Amino acid sequence: MKIINVSRIITGWIICVTFFLAVSITNSENTDDSNIKMYRFGPHDDLYIIGICINTYKKYIIMVLYLIINTCFRNMNHNIIGPWITLNIQDNTEQGKIIKNTIHKFNAFEISNINTIYYWFDWFIYIHLLLAQIDIVLIEVGADLLTSNTITWWYLKQTSEEKDEQEKDEEKYEQLEIEYEIV
Image (cartoon, rainbow, N blue to C red; front, top):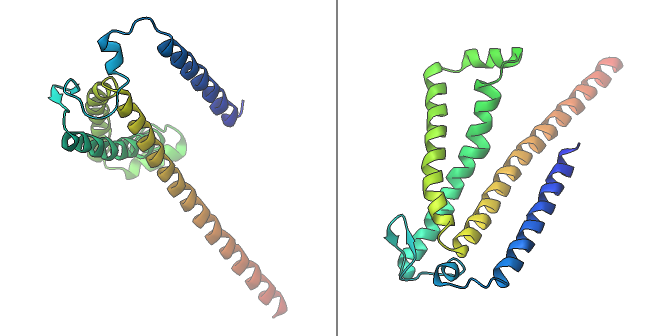
């Protein structure tokens, strides 16, 4: 199965779950105060995140800035450090063994441990943020999409530049062959 098909199946699942939740929430007979708190926006006197009351716009803006900055760090950890560990430290192919010999063992353990510690640190704060209010979820998703697309664009740009350089090198090589044949 092609990866794009898997991605589209997951997209379909997201749409189905979102639709089900939207219908369930809007038709819910359970409208007690705790259920309503989740679907508010902005600061409130009873918005607490890890014991910190977010009841002013100053605190709310600081929280939003934290969300955006931490999303950048999460994506660096998830999209750069994680794959590096998988493709370098955990690669047991012959090429991987050659690469492992160039990595200082202390650095490998440091990177791997920081990756693990960050996942737990981030998860603890992240779960409290996401369960507090729906606007936080929307901000997180938006910031995550922005940084993930930026990282993807950067990788594709790197690949495109390398391809352009390779094509230029091939053209130079072909030109040299033509000049060599003439001489």
